[in-house]
Amino acid sequence: MSPATLKPVRDVVLAEPRGFCAGVDRAIEIVERALQKFGAPIYVRHEIVHNTHVVQNLKGRGAIFIEELSEVPPGATLVFSAHGVSKAVQDEAEARGFRIFDATCPLVTKVHVEVAKLHKEGYEFIMIGHKGHPEVEGTMGQLADGIYLVEDVDDVHKVQPRQTDRLAVVTQTTLSVDDAAEISAAVQARFPQVRRPKQQDICYATQNRQDAVKILSPQVDILVVVGSPTSSNSNRLAELANRLGTEAYMVDSPADVKSSWFDGKTRVGLTAGASAPEVLVQAVIQRLRALGAISVRKMDGITETIKFPLPKGLKLDEPAPPA
Ligand code: SF4
Image 1 (cartoon, rainbow, N blue to C red):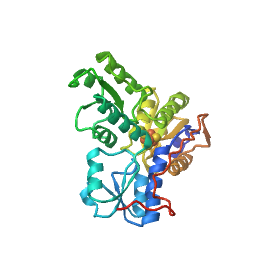
Image 2 (image 1 turned 120 degrees about the vertical axis):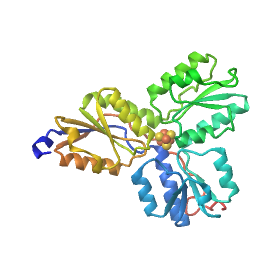
Image 3 (image 1 turned 90 degrees about the vertical axis):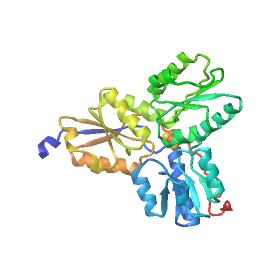
Image 4 (image 1 turned 45 degrees about the vertical axis):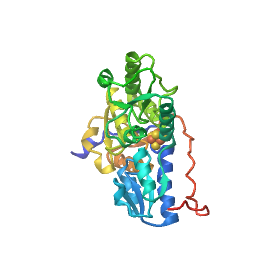
């Protein structure tokens, strides 16, 4: 492509809020502090958050990412990822005698706690989520049975709970807010007595990033979403913009940005999923400047102030939990 056709990129508008959420911040800090306090290697079950850059960075500092607990030597320090784990994984990790730090986002833990509480009261569950996502596996794995996954409205028509007197809905935290509302409404239509959470389980960060894209999309010709392909909430941002009629692309790094996307486009929106670091957003801005962007401004948006406390035993002056 000739430089002349690269010129059209003029203005970049940054979504507010975008990027790291409190759960991701906390999860990464847990691995960093564990490395600092106990030294490498620190084992992490699954990618701590779904971002290639974050995972590579922590790998370079001594984190070892595993999927099976049999890969972790006895006595090692193990961190559960932000997505949470099933009871079976938790029990196996304890039985194997690891020093465990749980980086499950407190908003995912809240769903686990709700499932356990209602299960004791005799409830079965319909979970709205994406099959195979580790958060869904962790939440469904809080129970041996009685929790049924639905991915769309079609699934709602097919699902067969064993009983419907005590039935509750739970959702993955990073879904499309609109899709989840539609699926949840279909559940309610089929099972009118179903118990739905007072507020959806979809987390504040997912909601806020999607709200920002809803405002930003009509103002731009194209939206670039910084996020890894495995990141559920990043995928939802690109999907949402596309639905609103704005061409959208996900990029894992500036190298993924293709100049051809911007042919004839002057206004570029830029956002980032909850697991994508700001350093990548800044690198993408540099790439857009190289493609002709001359102004970069932030849209008006809310400022997030949520912060989650770290688990005990990670500060240098705190006693470490036993392995
Ligand atoms: S996206 Fe939401 S649920 Fe996931 S880590 Fe962030 S705050 Fe927690």
